[in-house]
Amino acid sequence: MPIYARHSVHHVWLIDPVIKTLEVFGLESGHWLLLGAHAENETVRVVPFREIEISLGCLWLE
View (cartoon, rainbow, N blue to C red):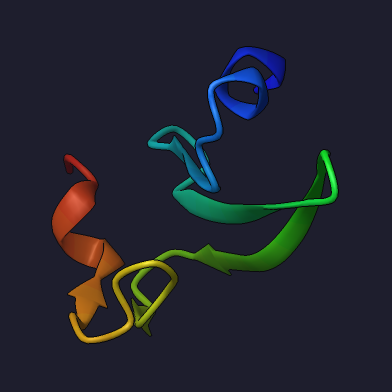
């Protein structure tokens, strides 16, 4: 994530398919802030794509 910050990437999603989570971070004044944590089969709208609804259940292999 420090490399992303150096290159002005403003949002990072960390997806863990093993524990079925999505963590969303935003870059604020050079520091990463956790903007949201989602899990399992939630349906979410997260930055920077709030217009798109994402069903997390579609990401996980059964």
